[in-house]
Image 1 (cartoon, rainbow, N blue to C red):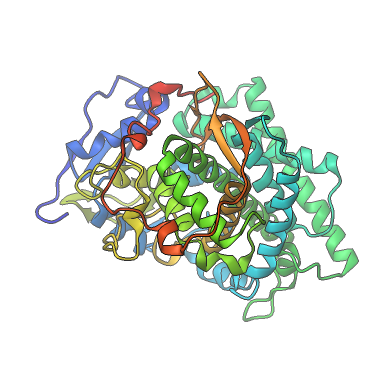
Image 2 (image 1 turned 180 degrees about the vertical axis):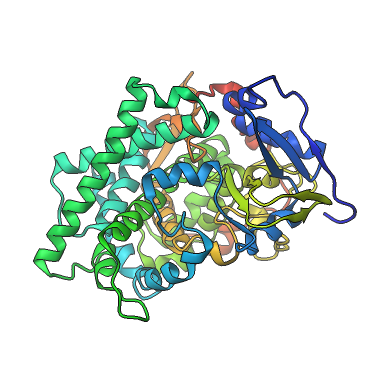
Length: 480
């Protein structure tokens, strides 16, 4: 992380396509291979050059200077086709105003209110589980997090048909955006194929639904205590309210952040626990001590330390956002290389999170990396929520949601992989599983143990049970 920087092109570019094939077929493996070639590695997607950050100091430099390295490039241009000018996608010139307007929705005083909704929906999900049932964990977590995103956005009840349509529109839009990210310039994106028609319909219907809900809220004039009510109520320093277009953009941004990232995080965590029974046993001891079989609430979170560390280690191994782009607003020197204005810079948490010089034995699932006695990672090393002024506004919301869900699930159930079943990776804008089939085994809380016994374990000890946990792309990767 110190010494002269090195900038160079990645090998293996093909005529016309550049590096589109390895990025499309095995994106995480391809990205993880880039640090061997330099700190700043140039790849091509078709004729377009992308400058990939492979060093944490460079990542930090880019993330904290959002004026020079503005939101833009392929990823954000695609998300803007759906989210418009929302908080996650807006350029630097609009960000400060939007952040100030939206901050009240994520004030610490509101988090217990959201947590109450979360606990209620988690209770409803678990009530439908039965011993021996075969469960697609990803589908179940998608259902839960989409429900939570919807219920915190719109406290007023949605009918089942509207809710199902919102989910389908989101799925079609996200799938279409992933295809366009890999081949952004392709004329195939303009053909009336079934996938392109689904993408266009998803975008159109989402906008119509949000416009209708916004109009309903305005007519009712009732504060439902949800995010949409806050969006309608906030005013900037000049007394201006958000326009309907701005409200749509923020609603989509929050829905995307609430449903598209937490579901894979929870799914990966349950997968890793099933592959590492020693850690799972320790987690069971913690939740038995803290919860005694009940669903977790906001007040339980400080006592769920191992739960927190499991989620952090899951975020390290499988960060939901696996690829982001920035665009330079002026000529800059980066890693000793001159980039003109308009250059596309790429950062991937996956690259830095899997560097062996930063995380010893990086493919091992080891929640004790995050113990309070362990050294904090240097800046730019752990960035699942970004950094700087553009750090995710919903980090605390997502952390609470994932903590309550994981603790509540494992307090009542043990999830085991089905014989012969394979977890299949399907990266979209997040490192998404295609499916995760597991079976349910009901469990009763064990006799209480001290929190230290339950959560700490032997630092540095890794029994054979946690070997070979890490899902490689050859284990069933698909981008369909």
